[in-house]
Image (cartoon, helix red, strand yellow):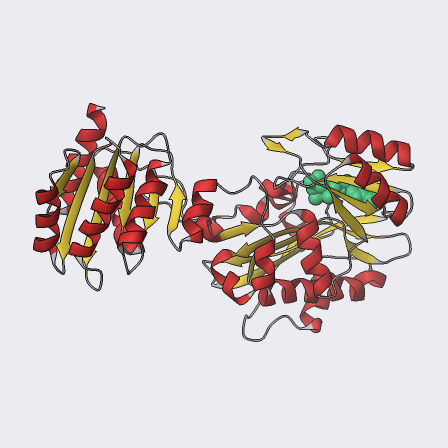
Length: 411
Ligand code: GDP
Ligand code: MN
């Protein structure tokens, strides 16, 4: 059930913005959680999930299963869907079976995602598999709740072939999701009557997770009905808005080993907004808007940006130095464009930051530096006097873009 690359992630309404025809930078703030991390958030808001343990070794998997009681499910924890089909979700009725499955799944490569962690969960009996999700519908400027009794399967297929089986309901963010609305959604979806109250509980809790935790996506596939007619989340896909993390210090612990580019991590720790792209021209601008337009002019000049980097307002010498280090730690970079518009940031300070960075780094990668605004004359004078052979001052943005593209091609 590959719903991790599914409907919720892809309607036109939530397509991330593109920069210069290149990769998305909107994803910079998206923080995808592993299934068990999502379930922890669910539990925090009273949304029914099964008991389980996260482990990283076969022995710990067996110990966890012994504690939970058999049968259990052994589940690969990776940021990709369709784990079941790939053999990353297995029922185990005994310690021997846990040992076997855990051994097979740990280290497994699920479409490029290597399994380092397992979730051992008390197994559930399933009578029905439903689907529920809430995502941010940017075009409607509202959260969109979706519900279907055709869960467990690829929900995109349901949306395409039997769209009437997928109920869509926009939520008023100021009013929240009322119980009456949730019940109506369950009824519109034609859920069995005796479980509609249980489904409403889940939908209300799912919206609570979505809004209180600053999520942009909360998805349950499958949402199951047990033979005892209980309703609970058997899977969890949650994406948090990383820009809202300051409101949720606890959620910062939900980092996933190996999922974040280490360079991005380093930049983030220093307050720099860095996003790796596919090209070979390093970019730094002070301010997100300037950095984005720098990507555009470089693309227009025929170049291919290697990254997005916003040095933010106060481009102190230390920040500049870190920015240079971060850009150059990408081995694909052949030339770099620094585009600084001095406002509160003074160009002379940026120039001194560059000199400090060059003294430390000893690189022969060409740098085009466009300084404009507060103290720009002073800044350019500092650079020229230093006579660093691979630093090329420029005055306009277009001139700078053309220079850097030419220099990248020479190498
Ligand atoms: P995904 O394939 O990555 O979406 O992983 P899921 O967590 O959705 O699991 C895949 C499938 O495994 C589910 O749709 C269920 O059919 C099955 N499954 C997962 N947990 C259990 C369980 O506790 N009991 C049973 N019987 N099946 C389960
Ligand atoms: Mn699933």
